Image (cartoon, rainbow, N blue to C red; front, side, top):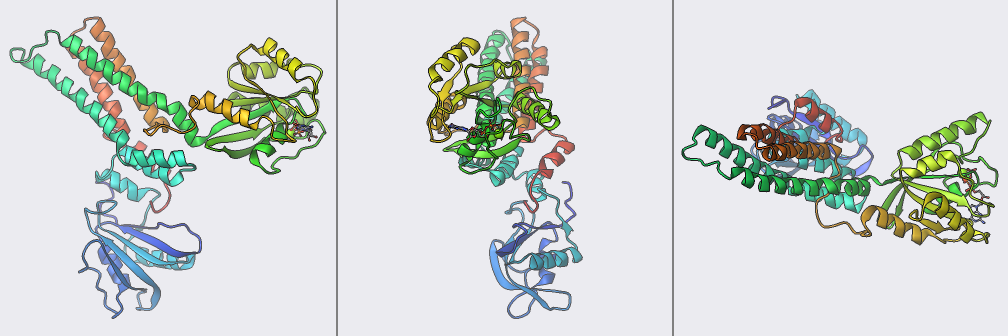
Length: 465
Ligand SMILES: Nc1nc2c(ncn2[C@@H]2O[C@H](COP(=O)(O)OP(=O)(O)OP(=O)(O)O)[C@@H](O)[C@H]2O)c(=O)[nH]1
Ligand SMILES: [Mg+2]
């Protein structure tokens, strides 16, 4: 195993002044190093003879036996620990200076400062958890909403691992069967095998597709819907952002061209998370700054998950802007006919919209002086992105691009198996693609990943985890 010789340490709690702080140590020398710093109430350095999974009260002392802090020390001896190595956790007072002093003493006595995620990396490399569970740990720590929290808990519980491992086992069984039949045709019969494999292969593809299909919704539920508000100047874009945010985030005036820079806010509408971007009103302008603002508006809308196209419904007509038409052609769009409170032209404009952009484009009437339209907006977003079910299903969603890509690659390989069967190719052809499918699945759970990828994944973790 990598790094086995090093004993690592890190502050596992936040670096803010708090009631309690935890300093974590893992590795072969965890106990002996901690023991040099720890004394019990009688002044004895007595950590080595303590049982695993016990907590000891005492003090951390420096090289001159001066007390640094009053602590509780938890011991978790290998292999029954987070990393499968000896782990010691020092519960000290949570002052930054105290925690740093203890950390420095540990380093002086032979520990190395852990890299971000190194404890979890050791748990993975030492075989305690697979890669889907390791990634779930990170997702759980960073969860921004209840969906992410529950989904990562499910993944941490091994639901995704089991689904992947089941298919891997079935694939390896078939590979072994084909190999045996080729080596020993007298005892293994391949007559009719094509058809049997075809049925199995279709079943694997449909199970994998099911998982892949959860990813669009899963990623959007986890990260939020990138929602860009576009429209002409003065339509009420910034007013909409403020209304959704529930506070005055953006400047609102009756001067056209008020907003120039993009303003981003994460907004929660019940269980829907929106990453809302307010942009500059789209129009032709000679103003240098506004011009850049318009370019940025168009750019950010190009990568939006959802465009809210807001129109001032006191305008005489909907003037068709090529940039706007281009943006809303290829996207999830909701048209907001705004200033409903002072306009008597709403129905006429609604017709115009349908004439220009087709019957299917959703249109709602809104007013930013009251709450008109906000409920309709929620309902349309829920239908558009979550098939009308705001409550996520009680099952695993793929929310990780790396996993999704490996699933897509697996499916591609299995589709090649399908084509080989349909073209009546010889069995050893299938084996190559089955092997590839098996390897791609291995990437998901971390059976077949290179060290660089492992480094990259864990480097995104927090310190001390
Ligand atoms: N009566 C009424 N006035 C509104 C409504 N929405 C916005 N306004 C007013 O319209 C003016 C423009 O609003 P903004 O929100 O600044 O418009 P904008 O689209 O952000 O404009 P730019 O940033 O210039 O592109 C302000 O005076 C708002 O108070 C509405 O629903 N009803
Ligand atoms: Mg504005």
